[in-house]
Length: 285
Image (cartoon, rainbow, N blue to C red; front, side, top):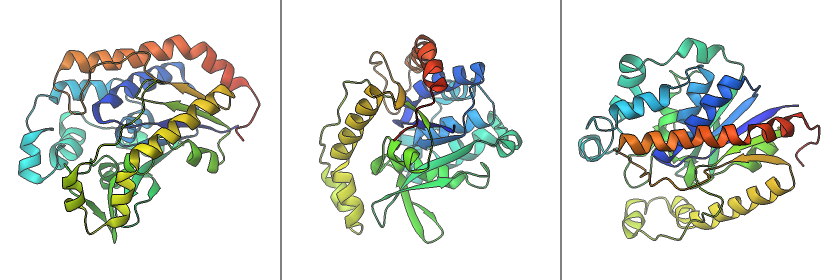
């Protein structure tokens, strides 16, 4: 059997996922692949590099550093999360990422990105975390507050715009056991938010605009499908058991820690059921 992790994004809400994955590392659960969305991909790289604790550590250390995220990098370089500081200075100098261990890992990591030209999701395998850093950055570049990331002839933004919870992709790729880590509670549904500036900002990309405008519909459909597949025992879901008032760009270290601890706690509570699920032979259909 082949096992896949599907990781929802949500900016710093994704620190919940870091708590879950750090516990998965402790339990040495065999994973064959990960499909990450936005922050989910950025958390996942630490799983492949076997660096538990790294994501919570650097996010708490630099959350109040103006170079990391917020108005300063937005005004300076057009990205609410700094390209240079977050994607190069931190992993290369300040809290070093273990590129060697990552590249030796047998686990596949697919980063979900939204193609701005087609408006569709793409799932790009991150074979070399250092060489493919711009793909990871593209996959977590929030629309409206991030520059479009150009890779070759293609233009990308946050993967969650086109596919927030890519369970269908995991099934399509042939994985038998799928563990989904959400960053919203079971009850959450996305509301339609029309932001007029988006219509102006992306007027050259009508397909992307349509995807953006229908994002809440797609998200809510995926949410219902996850709940349905979970009830049938075809997938296993770990999600927040309560709401932590964490912002997408959070500056409060206590709230960041609370979100991380909730991920750890929810995993620990559910892990006996997870072990039972992983032992079952029934395939996802």
